[in-house]
Image (cartoon, rainbow, N blue to C red; front, side, top):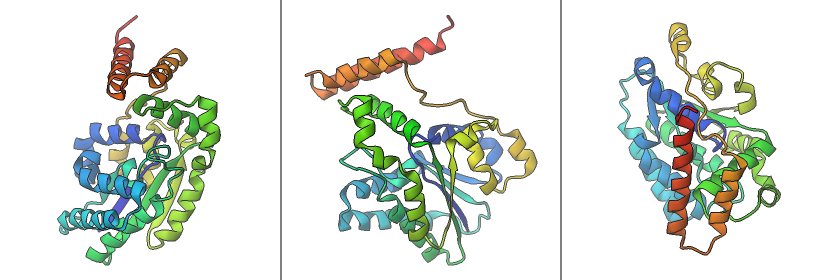
Length: 266
């Protein structure tokens, strides 16, 4: 079995990669078994839960979910298996008190070890996309404004969470922990000039026929940064004294209106 993991990191083009996989499913399916988050919800949730708790009981659940997922794969299907979700690396730093992706190396090792337990001759390759530290911190900050009760200013967040931006360190630790796998990292900036954008980071590892690779349709950039005034409105809502359920709904309404305005011709 050939198992490929694209496990993040968050805010490094992963959603664009997954959209590309989804939109090219018919083209890719003869050559590749693709599993996105919706195809492995229990595994992703177990990874996220253990990343936050580090509890032995949660790790046992993670091992069980890994085993159930790997065991369910058809051993007679010769197509490579691609798991693509940043949640396999756990929660994004800044959530649940997490300061970095410290859980990611052991999460990757758990998946690797389980795959090799069921398929001793399995070939496991782990792929990460990374990003320059400042750009990554800025993008994470925007995501926190959108999806959490973040009340810090951007510069405060960047200072407090600066250590979390050392993604190369996590890649290096993963190479040590998951030593029976091949581990690769590609900077988002290096992929930006390719016609397929972030998806190009995966291409060398998928063994697609040249004609298939040439026929892949690119997906447009996802989760692009809102304008400054929208960010200020999101921050103001997070700092308001309303119940967070109301704040969340107002943020969703604001972001929905923003998406509609971008789809409407001027």
